[in-house]
Length: 468
Ligand code: 2HG
Ligand code: ZN
Image 1 (cartoon, rainbow, N blue to C red):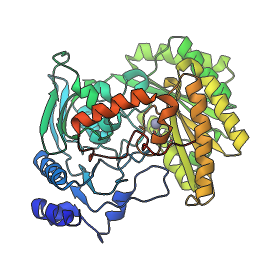
Image 2 (cartoon, rainbow, N blue to C red; image 1 turned 90 degrees about the vertical axis):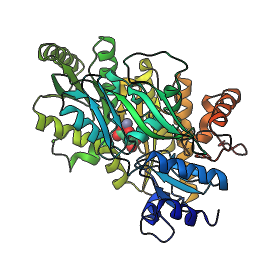
Image 3 (cartoon, protein in one colour; image 1 turned 30 degrees about the vertical axis):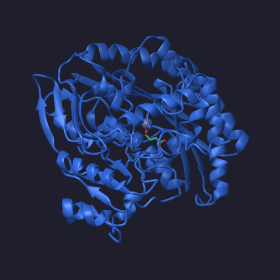
């Protein structure tokens, strides 16, 4: 492994390599996950083409060097960290929007295209790319596909997988595989695209994507209901779901989440806000107005302290900017932030909110809850002011996370709704999946990567250890 940096430098040119001693090398040892450790790779290789990705994967297989693919590094579970050493392969330079086709309603893009940039480009032509992770201003579409990212609009429009029609993937060793289609329908052969999406870069490295577009909805509006506490907000969400209403977004944020964004938000949150329900409706203006009225009435019946209807783009933007700031602001305000993105069946949202509250009370660990409650996907952030590098602190936080996971599973839920498993949650996998089920998935991985060198140490527990 010792000469791998030199070999890659000779193959791709020194401009493509962030090597030891480079001022940016530390960046490639971290992502947005709550890990105190840092995983410096031997080097990061910034590929610019499919051919370069193939060359790197060929060289690394020949020399038995682990490769960790990386998009924008916005992942929250350590999926892009070189936990077993070796190199990081970054697609951040592959930012071309190759084609936008209004006739076929597709776009063809390189993996490094920033999600928000793609959205703006297609919207300028009257189309719509719905998946909207909160990090859309800096996350990239390749990373979104790797984690099958969600976002607020998943409530109505679904997650990233539903928008990836075709993929070009480079396998460990350098073979380039093109799978999927650009047609609206297609059932020819097995659905390898669905199989690759969400595998967290453990099957192959995505080098090109064909994404599905929709016509841009003619109008959208934002509705905010302010409640005295999170239990009432959860009840409001359940009521809206039972009413059969389908806004495009149905989010919750509790008091702790609101408090960290209050000061920097251009939107002024009411002083007595104990929790908010944030909604968006879209479609034709008449239908939208009716839906907003019904939701507003529901909010009133449930004792909302305030209801705000925002139709002006500037006002809506202010509310959304504030919402997207929650995660980063919690990180700024607390030294320890262990964020879980559990997901429970929709009928169990109120119960799960109550159980999170109980975990917080029993452990004495403050917990901010926000996120995509309409999907049952709650971001449960365990917070603290202690030293994150202290192993006792980590143990305490992860023991509380384990309690949250246990409640989630008991209610029929799942460990991750949208962030993935990566490194941080791999040891909890046996809480949800049987040994046998994980074994089948490991076999599937080894079909694409028999060497086991591509993004090793992710998704499944290291065989010798398991969190008790
Ligand atoms: C969001 O919805 C992100 O804002 C981040 O998924 C969630 O920090 C978090 O827990
Ligand atoms: Zn989220």
